[in-house]
Image (cartoon, rainbow, N blue to C red; front, side):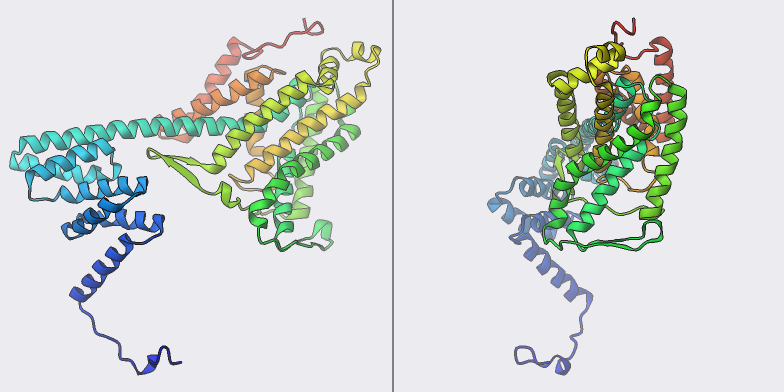
Length: 459
């Protein structure tokens, strides 16, 4: 086909050599520096420092005079200083070392170490001192970045533990039911998120118990970014409904019978896993995060993932809502009355069976919420809840059985301790072993946990 009056088949391929290709590359690099897209321009500025080619310095200096974006201006300062490390002018080298130290340029560490070697060989003491000072400044910056990153990851892990454990703090802590099927309610919430994601898109084909079932999809153009808004309440409601069925059919006969409730709920967890496998298959399914949870903020070289920030924020919201429900509503008053003294509450006219059902459903619904959040940061599969059940019980017991604030402090403490040990030991397995060992020793000292729940029926 003729394009703009030119037949591509009639055009001969131009012969190029290394010099021509190099010139073409320089032209494209200069064009990239003038790109109106900020992200592409930033990438071009960073790439310009690769190889520390002095020929790229004039273009960077021209852009520096007109650049308005703060991130690009910082990248320009860093790239210019990196290139000036190869300058033949001693004053420019010294200034470049100082600038890279001020910026805490992690990318400049290798280049500065090369300068140290060259300055040592040339016995250039001022340059050697400047380069070593810059390296020390960058190392301090790296230490701060690692400390802040570790703290964020610790709070993030603690928030995940908190979201997982808060439902267990209701069913186990307040009701005394050792619910080994708590992890499967997490899976129910995660699969609810998966189904809603597909319904918002092109639909979903399932084969539950050998029967073919096709769920139609809405084919929404914005479905990939909006499905999670509906998935959050839906995961709570579906998990709560399953919890009501379980409580009415099994759990109501096992109150005050811890061993029987442990064995029964363990069996139920196996049954629920098999049901999920029969409906959705044994393989993990993919839940895609919305665009507004897929990115990150980079602040002073510390990366804050949006999905992790979201989990931290929602963990705070869940704790506030749970506290308000238990302490500021009539349902919370009934829950606390029944859990502290069931017989006395029944004598006062409280319908204890209904309260038990609502309490158990509330705890299971919170587990479903945890599943919705975990679907954004991990795999979704029939046995996903088993990865968290031990940590959830551990968090509740360390915080103090039945104490919500204790669960919060325990989750954050375990999360930060785990990430700190992993950071400094460099081995996740040893870090987890040490955390578990510390928890065992702590419970030997305080068997009731951080905060002891006291009531007339327990004293």
